[in-house]
Amino acid sequence: MRVLLIGPPGAGKGTQSTRIAAHFDLTRIATGDLLREEVAGGSARGHTAQAYMDRGDLVPDDVVIAMTRERVVKANSKGGYILDGYPRTLAQAEAAYRWAKARGVPFDLALYFDIGTDELLARLAGRAREESRSDDAEETIRHRLEVFRAQTYPLLAHYERRGIVVRVDAVGPVDAITERILAALHWHKANALASGADRPEWAFGAAEE
Ligand code: ADP
Image (tube, rainbow, N blue to C red; front, side):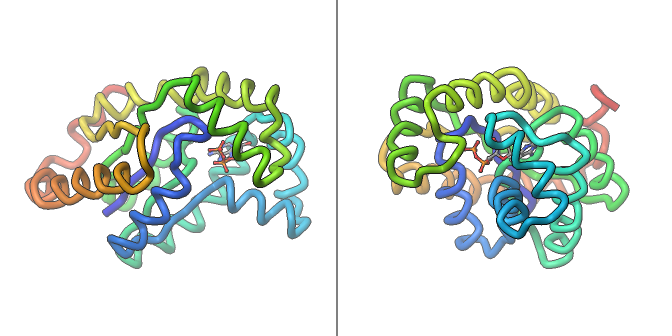
């Protein structure tokens, strides 16, 4: 199974993707975590990324595309992955589509975390107090939400055109949300993915290509 997550900062993607990965034995690829590791390790890539991350801006596409590609290729040979935080721009989505097409392995599902701005601001303020992440200051949080609206939210329509979006109500107790997600994924695994085996693989992606 190859799943990607779309949701604003604070929607719970990290927590839920860790649980989904464990449940279905998938590799979790979280670009935010990978970038923070690059920053901590002092790599050239980390050096480039840091200023963008501190401001709450997206790191340039070429940096993230190269970093993620290595991981996806490896995870794909192991039976599947869940992408948390990638793709986050249409350019990244197109790059991902090209790799997938070259290998005949498209994404199966895009899980959209549905949640309102007020709830997000409250959650992110709480996380800022607990974790003191450099990008969780209030002004930066607002900026990250705007960046999500402008650059990442359009991916929802992009994947809706492909017919692979599953919407999840991301408000409520964490365990209840996990249950909703797992139920949806099990359903898709049993139904949509099983019959999808004989779909003309690239037929429904024609809109952008
Ligand atoms: P959140 O979902 O709370 O924004 P992440 O840990 O996913 O947190 O990401 C933190 C930061 O890492 C982002 O604000 C951005 O600067 C950078 N980042 C993560 N993924 C990407 C990506 N796919 N493209 C560009 N920048 C990214």
